[in-house]
Image (cartoon, rainbow, N blue to C red; front, side, top):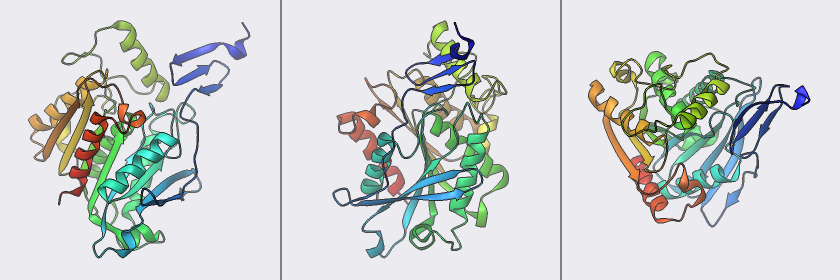
Length: 318
């Protein structure tokens, strides 16, 4: 076989890499433009956060926002895709975040961080923090009017699915270590089917060697082998629950799916927060009979509507 076409790593149905350096993304590459959707009552636009690195975001705003007396909560959203596929501009994420904005009456900033393996971790974390600090910088005014004029920085939330939930966790840890601009604090975090893992199975987690090798291989791909599978970035409780105390927010909602291989890690995260003495409020929602990120592809099914209802309630509380 021609060495230029020799397969290096494959994680279906997401990505293939070749020894030649070629990266083949098998999904998550479609893009739709920002738009005004009168039916949904949401307008979106794309912004450049850092032209040097190419960090961008898609902002979503309820069309009613300019006529409201009160400012709106902010949700900074980090998309999933195993750190290697997806963007705020692909249809599933655009429509999911738009629906969330319409139903929860929030402003959303959906972050486009650079993807591995071309940009291995911790680049996605660094980009995501840069975007979060950019959002926080508008607490005292700024050039992005939706944030400077319409956003309530007393109610800043982080959210994400799968790898994006992993990123949101890391942002809360980094915010606890160094703070955010203008003293902005994170009110809460919503994790949807978070991507955490580790060497030793937890709870009812699969013992299947092939499944575990695939997940661990993906992690090694996206971090270029720089971090083990028990690194705190992928296994927050590798050293016990003590590290969970540093999660800088007041409340956390973790959503898991019964048929998701990552389910037990999400449940373990909740237990770790509770046992650590963290002091905030943690809640768990399990979608029975459902698989990983099912709500992205069947947004009108009963369990997806239930999940959306919980998210709306989470972001709407004072």
